[in-house]
Length: 342
Length: 256
Image (spheres, rainbow over the protein chains, first blue to last red):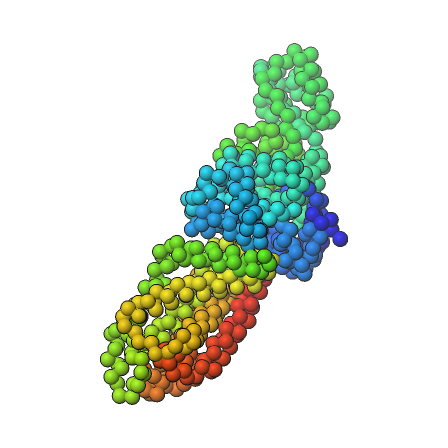
């Protein structure tokens, strides 16, 4: 039997009439208190999987146990233990935020005395206290998402499903939501199953990541494990004087094999990993080469996706709001290493 | 609170809250029955002079019963529109996720339909009394009349819920409305059954709505008639459509 607060999926399949298999035999396990990132492009089968795990859609075959209960035979028990914020925050435009909380707390059978207090607590937690008495028809996308999250938490679920919770949000709303999700897992021990098409979201939040494509789970592990499977980081250096390009390339080749074209400088895949970077700097300094620019490119989850599926994660970056984590401005993990891509 | 009751009450509260707080929903529910009542009872009052028309409470009461039952049936159908809209916008999924027992969702909508109709019935009754409607039946008779209409409201709500849950789009509206409209208007609306002739008499003779109208008019005139048949027909329809609505919920569950 699955641990009471975990998820266990075996050979889960969902076929739609006259369509391909949206989910094609996936196996996965999510431990209690873990944040599991389910990463994949549009149409990969992420939402269909969430719908099956939340009892919204019966599987065609296979089994899934959520919180220790079978999603087909014990749907009501599963629903009692989970909260879910689906891809589109479906809210009633004629109700205020507070009225939505009243509806949700009533439907979950919270005692009358507890309803108001729980509503206030959650609205405060997601920063909607001041907007509580406004009709949600006038809420921004970020406010709707935050209210949706609050609604998913009214009955203190032990497992939370978040289906692309930050799609279309601005940086501030996205960061606030990430913080809250991380807090839920860290402080409250909530198990989180998070689907996303944003590499950085999975990287930043998930303890483990499953990559899904065309209904198949193509890779699974911690973000660092997955990146390590793909290869080593690359370092790219540009000399202050173009005359030093060849000398710079020679020095860098002591630390690894060349990695793709670097017209203004040189680039190598570090044999010893990130720890070689300090040695590289010392060696360039010892040769008297003045460095204009030096950058370490860590392998990203997109590299993992590319390596596993043969193509880049569809829409990554392109569909993200301007200035959000993951845009070219964010050099920490966003830039894809050409050596790995090759 | 049991989870079934909690879900049903939540949905009832929300539906009634929107109904009473939104003029676009509230006004049509009131205006249409009042319009029909005024048009039929007022504009067609000379029909009561037709030889053989012997309804002792007068034509206003005769038409009031039809409009009351019609408002009950259409109150149920309008609730179906709401269900379809909720599932089309995704709100239905929120309910499906929150409900331990999903039949409670239908129960919640049905309770809301009853609440909506009771409000309409109250306004309609007050207007009819102000217009001079004569009531010859006693308290028990009136209880029977409103009870019968309430069962009709339930049956119509369950019928519309079954359609709405299968189609899950407001485009299913005509499919919910037209059969109810046909059944109601192929009954003795303007004249008693014995004054109808031709094909309409044949159809009306086998139409269950005829028994409902006959019983309702019997109640208001203090001369109950076809009571058992009417309650049996109304309860039978409610039972049949509860199975239909349950099937609709299963279809919605399978569709995700």
